[in-house]
Image 1 (cartoon, helix red, strand yellow):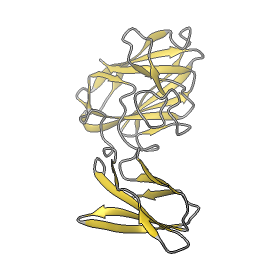
Image 2 (spheres, helix red, strand yellow):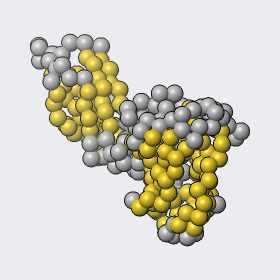
Image 3 (cartoon, helix red, strand yellow):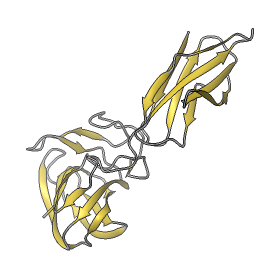
Length: 238
């Protein structure tokens, strides 16, 4: 029995997961131009191979070859997969400031690049398949929210800034209070303590007034959860 599975939650790399009933050697191959090309060999006890240096939003085709003690070799059926898009705005174009940004629509990309989460699992398992914890929202507009927040986690959004000053609204539900910080291209623009709102689904809007901004295209808005104790629905620049 042989099986080959492909898994990719990254733009530039993917994982091949394979198993074979009886063999003592594995060879990993990727289709290139008009034939399969060897990427390398793995130990018999290995079951995962990572291929790197790939292009985002592109299709790749793989197969695994195996050989047993008698010298007989065979190849798995070829399997194809698309890598994720390169780090980019969620909808393909930057969010606009002034404007409202849903928390769950942070940029595509890898952990430590466009987001940081204390683990690698989306615990509620909703909306996206990376490590950020996203769950259905019970606020008036429904949709999704960022929950299960831990100290130091952050999200990054690509934005076009069209004003020099704005009032910033944060839609928050807080059981214990917390603290949140905003940066634009690495420069802190605002930071505020969050008071208890009455529960994890008791939503209130917090406003930071007259925040100074530097206009420009494709700027990076980073939202850092300095101290946990709240859920986050959206941010609005007015």
